[in-house]
Every structure is written in C-alpha cells, then in structure tokens.
Image (cartoon, rainbow, N blue to C red; front, side, top):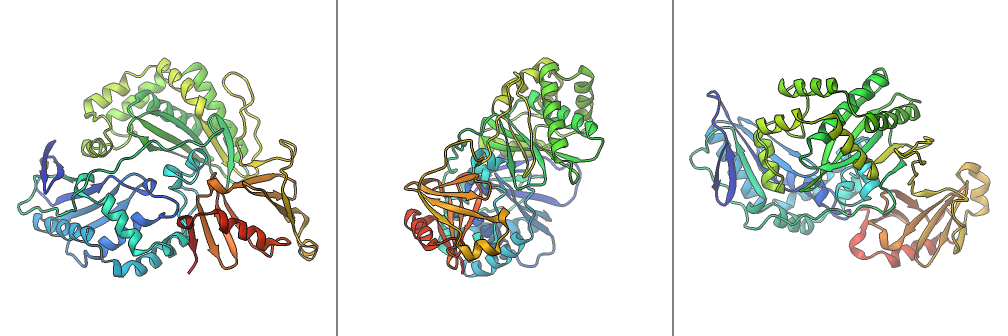
Amino acid sequence: MQRTSADGVTVLWTPAPTPGPLTAQLTFGTGIRDETAPTLGVTRVIEGLAMSEAGNRPHAYSSNLRDDLIEFTAKGTPEDVTGFLLTLCRALSDLPLHHTGHVTSALAGFAAQSTPNHPAAPLRARYGPHAAGLISHEHPGSYAALTPETVRAHAAARFTRGNAVLVLDGPPPPGLALPLPDGPPPRRTTPRTRAHVSGTWQRRPLDTVSLLLTCDASDAAATMAQLVLRRRVERAVHCTADTGAHWFLRDQDTLDRVLVVHPRPGRARETAVTLWQETLRLTRKGPAQAELDALTDDIRSEAGPLWGPRRPLERAVLAEHFAIPYLDDDTLFKNHAAVTPQAVRTYLEHALRDAVLVVPHRTELHLRTPNGTLLPNSDCWHPHGSRPPTPGTRHRMNPLRRAVTRRSHHGEYVLTPWGIVVRDAHRDEHDIRFDEIALLRHEGPGRVVLTGCGCEMHLHPDQVAHGERLIAALDAAVPAHLVHTAP
C-alpha cells in the first residue's frame, strides 16, 4: 500500500493487479451518527446536492452514506476519474443550495418507504436519539425542516481536506486535483450511554430480536464469539430465522456489536430465549476448539466475515479517519487463529455486564444473568405498581371521547414541573422530561415529541380536557433550536 497526498488530502493506493479501469473512492469521516436530532438528514442532503452536479457521465459513479462514513466512488479512465473528483470537490466547496428543496422532497419520499428494522435500532436503547442511536431515526419530516444555512454550516465543518481520504486501486493519475476547503477532522467524542440500560432486556417497536455487546475495536476474541454465537443460534432455531452480525463504531477504541435475528411471526419469545440461552452457554463453557478451527478456515479462505472491512485499503481508511490501529492481512489472520476458548469466555463474561437484549413489543421474558439473578427489564414504560403514581395536574380524556373510544385506548396525561407523564389504560406510565426532549415537531395544533429514550409521543390538544395547556407547557419548555414546524 502506497501513501501520498493531493491538495492536502491523504491518498492511499495499491498497484493495480491487472490493466483496467481505475477505481477511486473519496471518503469523509462523517456520517449519520455525527448529526443531531434537529439536523438529522443533513449529510444525506449534502450527498444529494453534490451528486446532482455530476451530471451525465460515460462512466460508473455512485455514493454511499454510512453511520460513520460517506463514500463517493467513480470507475473509469484516469481522465474520467479526475474529472469526476474535480467536479465533486468543487460542488462540496460551493454547494448548489438552490436545489435544496428538490433534494429534501425526494429524500422525504424515500424515508416514508423505509423499514424500521434497521440493524442499528437496538442502539436507540443504549444511546437514545443521540450519536449512534440516531441511525435508525430517519423521518420524512426531518428533511423538510433543513434550511440551506444548516446544510452549508454542516458541510463547512465536515467536508474538508483534513477529514477526507482518497483510495485508488492504481497510481494517482496525472492532473489529480481535490480542491476542498481547509479544515481539521472534527472531534468525535464517546457518546453518552443512557442510565439503567446496561445489562438489561428491553422491548422496542421492531420485528427483530437483537443482542448488543461491546468490545475493544481490535479484539479478535469478540469477533470469534459473535460468529460462534451466530452459527449456534442458526442451528438452534432450525433455520426458522435469518441472522445478521453487524458492528458500529462507538469511538476509536470501542465497537458496539449487534447480532440480529429475524424470527417468524409468533416466534419472537422463543427466538429471544434461544439467543440468550446460547449466549449464557457460550459464556459458561466457551466454544469447542473445533468451532474456532472451522471459523479460522473460513477466514483463511475468505468465506467468513472478519472484524470489519475485508480489503486492506478499507481498513486503512478507518485507521486514517478514526485512529483505529491498522492490521495487515497476515496479522489479522494470526490474531483470529490465536483465539482460544478461554479468551472467548473471558470476553463474554465482561461484555454481558453491559449487554442489551432488544425484543419486539408485547414479548414477555423471564431470563437470568450469568450469576443466576433475574435479568432486569429497562423498558421506558413503568408498569403500574412499580412506582407510586406521579403527582401533578391530570388531564383526562373528555367524556365524549371516552364514550366513543375503546377502553384499551383510554389514557391521560399528568403535567408536572419537570415534564409530562403519559398514563395509559393500564395505568402504566411513560415520562417525557422537558430537559431530555431531543426534538419537538409541530403538526398543526398537535405536537410530536422525540423523547430522551428515543420514543415518539404524539400529543393533540383534542385528546384530553384542557389539552391546550399541555401544548403550551411543551412550547414554553423546549428551546427554539429543537423545534421543527411542518410545512
């Protein structure tokens, strides 16, 4: 792997194995997790505006937005590639903001068709609507609220030469120019973990069962543990559910690993129990050496997934952007081949302390921790009887609405000095603390609140008696920069 620079941008390249088209990938170390709830979608808007300037070209080109990176790729002759990169960098330096409305309208339509079962959805339980917890929060209304000023400010901070890396599968072509604005890489901090979530299980509005574990970024034992667990679960459920292993960067030292299982209808509880029991079994006894050997053979033959990206250049890009130690292929393989059953056990014993098991709504579980105690539930709804009823001003459903509404849908709100409590027909409660609200959307006279736990609560003044007082309390408590108004 060779290293050089162009216009202050780091360039990584390897000699092409055979003559052919040149492939270039310009990456920026920013993604969805670097947005906030009020600016959610801004990186995708920047992507759309920049790509709109590419026009019709005789070669292949594309872009891809990830949780931690955005990639712009072109493949063609050296002249094709240099032309595309020059156009792209000029567009990023001076975005065609007059197209913002068109791009946001198109993206809003795409978001309305997206599925909620994103593999990052369990990260909502850990972080709420912040950092990696934002990844699965795409909403059509987010794009309409983005102004050209917001888009310009985000691009100026994130799309700079200090935050860019160019990867080539051949030597840099003559005339390569990357005229990006000057600026350092943005500082990324470790996201704040929500209180009382680590080492719990939780229900979320999903159709999947997920186990979230944390590990050191270069921990080969964690990789092998996840892969062994995935194979065991696939065998245990007799191929009645698909599984997926994913990883997300928490910071330069840490990964959040998510094992996702898609159960068949009515099998969510059975699948969750199987996933947890197999995890405990692997923690207590460790994997068989034969299981590790089989995975090592797959890695050697490139048939099985590794810690993350397979190509050395992909790993080098992450090392450049996020200061993750770079490992070449030989070192990476040796690290995985050296993993022992005891190393897997040791990793899992530590990881289960802050694990989060996420299951679909209405799934009842009674699971045990490795030491035999009951695995706590961390749902954001507090069951009736688990705490005293919250005192405050009650806003009950008006009599006419109660008469025409099913009893199971009856509910009320309690207004307190610190927030609003939603109380359902079973007397279960959900807190909406004013100081934890991540976003407030105005939808006519009603409001949609993105709470600190990542739930969306819909409040309308007609739902309860004197509902306009609830709306007034919300509007007075939430700062203007956290407010979106539907067009």
